[in-house]
Amino acid sequence: MRLKFYSTLLLATCCYLGAGAVTKDTLPPTVAKDARLKLVSKQFDFTEGPAADKKGNIYFTDQPNNKIWKYDTKGKLSVFLKEAGRANGMYFDGKGNLVACADEQYELWSISPNGKIKVLVNNFGGHKLNGPNDVWVAPGGGIYFTDPYYQRDYWLRRKPDMKEENVYYLAPGAKEAVVAAADIKKPNGIIGTPDGKLVYVADIEGGKVYRYNVNADGRLTGQYLMADKTTDGIALDEQGNLYLCGNGVTVVNKNGQQIGQIHVPAEWTANACFGGKDNNILFITAGKGIYTIRMNVKGAE
Image 1 (cartoon, one colour):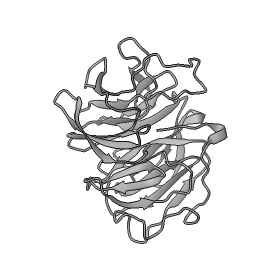
Image 2 (cartoon, rainbow, N blue to C red; image 1 turned 30 degrees about the horizontal axis):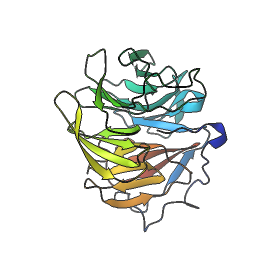
Image 3 (cartoon, rainbow, N blue to C red; image 1 turned 90 degrees about the horizontal axis):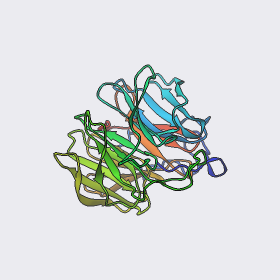
Image 4 (cartoon, rainbow, N blue to C red; image 1 turned 60 degrees about the vertical axis):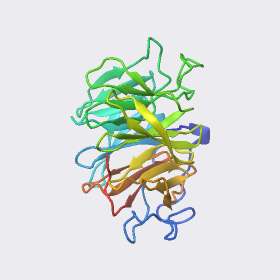
């Protein structure tokens, strides 16, 4: 989940269809018939980290303003948490806690439904993390998160505490994370399958998206190239199609074949997730704006 602040913030330019908008000839078949991309709001500075709870309410971050917002199933927007640790990528665990990549202090948080914060990880081997970026919670409760280094203007430090930019795994009940994958230049977006057997990771620097097998110990092996595409966040639907965010949303099937493109009127599309009361709304964060589009598939998350 790449961030560019203030002078390079991404600009949304329209509310529904228009310049750079969705067109029928490029839409993937997973988009509902006659569906249109809808701008919900563009009152933010940089939107990121969308995650849906069990009811379909969607939580997302306005990272420069240090807030987590809620977009409920009735279309109402409200602030869920202020002083949100500069939260970036997020995902709900099975207990309803919101796991968040809080890179203000290079931490991984668990946020309870009433906003109580618990720090899950704040170092690796005694070294400060680079800045947790995106996260996925496996069915058994294990947590995978990516840890690339992006220099933030709110940090006092000007260099990383360690050279490695890895994917990490925190086993249920464990106090320390382990390296899950170290064969990516700069890991960014991450998502896994509902059965917990496969994990997809975006290498934003290498311009690739990889698929991994999940070992019994949680480590990721068998790297397989899914897409030659510079990708930020990733979403997954019930059919195994991947939604690769960056230049709009590129949709590839489970075999890595591109099946369509959702054009988003912003210079950069950071992330997406499925939500809504029927889990068939694709919610997209892009620069100052948040967008939705109705699908004829449900999310796998």
